[in-house]
Image (cartoon, rainbow, N blue to C red):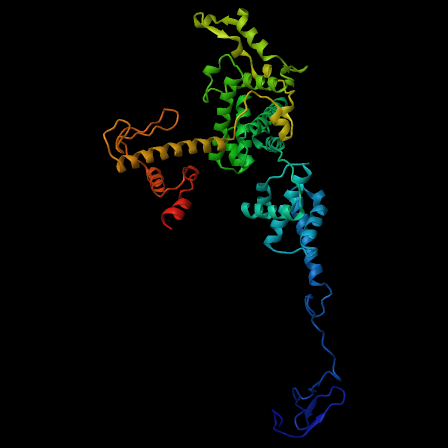
Length: 467
């Protein structure tokens, strides 16, 4: 190959560097000292890249790095959930689930949150909601619930009861709306709220539902009872829950308190309704507290040492004329002494219902009302309504198949269907709705009444009509 500069062909090689140069112009020749290394005999050997390593020359294995990063993530999430002292236990749980492999990615963060929730529920030493975990981990609530179920089933964990009272105390203590409230009044709010939370548990207001809307409803109620200016809208916004759901729980609780006023024997129970039950709640909660401190001994009810006798209180209030006074500014209008008594005089705060109790202990206590779950009551009403619609559909079908002028036979147009407590009745000659048509179709296809009463119309239509 001639020189690129002078086209000369006379070259010599330098003994020190091994590079060749042109004897005519002295130009250094490029790529002239390359020596091929064949079969790795004389040249240096390469480094083998084994499976599980990060590349040539790396001293940190992939698995070790993954476990190290997973441990840091576990420490970070547990610290943000205020469970830093339980991080080692969470690591042991995850190590057992993953056979020591741990992991990385979005699913691993969800697994950490699920293990934290299962551990807290297992020990029963604190309160941790799924909403808090979702905000820290950044996942979907249903995704976290599914992962929690798998963790509990795999590890065979026996989860304890959810601490509703503890959740209320935690929410009330950390609420910025109560930061400026007096210490004694705040303590009264917390105790009365814990009492009502146990009552709500006894009345099945929390069965099958998320607990936080009920906590917001109870907190708004006790704040209103004790004169603390705090709106349910602000509390729902602070707790990041649906305002509509909170108002629904609030209404359900007021309805239960109205029932309690009638069942407990409050003298003015006939005047208590959903709109004014807050005004009577001071005396009502005090009577409920006294009733919850009564102990059963056979068929007799014994008053505990720190309790009072409700019957004697009512008798004294109705018997003593001195309990009433006249207002000179109101032309002799009599006002009741009971209305002038504040909730401080009724509420003692000594009942165990203000503390955390097991479900069995809560159900054994008597607060004046033993109610059924709301969903169960609505389900029974729906079954009764469908049963009446089935009867009406059979009458319409019979009037068409066997028309006659008998008095016990009615036409479909003159048939009236009365449902409920008598307040809402369908007028004569009114048109039937879509549910009546569906039920009538199912009856014509000889579907059993018991199946129709369950209300699974789409499944029944697919099995018996469109099949």
